[in-house]
Image 1 (tube, helix red, strand yellow):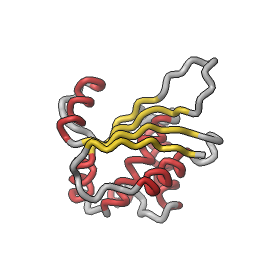
Image 2: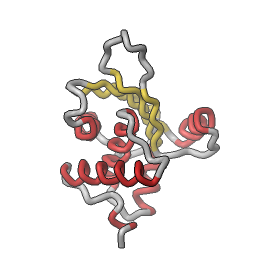
Image 3: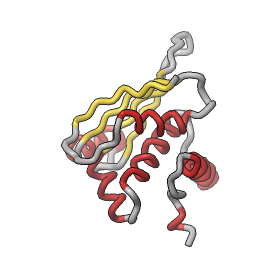
Image 4: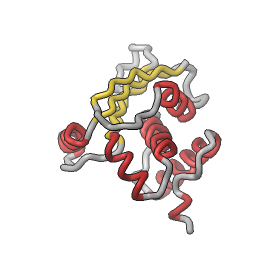
Length: 152
């Protein structure tokens, strides 16, 4: 079972439904975990910028931040961690990249969840593997390949 505990601190229009959020997180988790819990915070730019500055040292709002749970081994909980999505950044990126807003939201939730599961893109081989997995998940959900525009 996938649980997404969602808190909305954004005034942005056209936010995804709880069902969509759970579907996207669940698709990213797949069969990697029998159950998983993610805390999701949807924010506006000022809060997104503050968190990105405080935790990554980058003074601008970003699309998604992932904070994997760091539970001691003796604590047996399905908590994967926390995701923070900056709704205005996701909307702006979707417009700039000529992508459907829903598809870009799906991509950000899949991308962030994969980070919670330990996937990364610091090295080229890691990035290639993570992007391939994101593409596989999103296409299976019925969305276009998220990196297709870079391949042309």
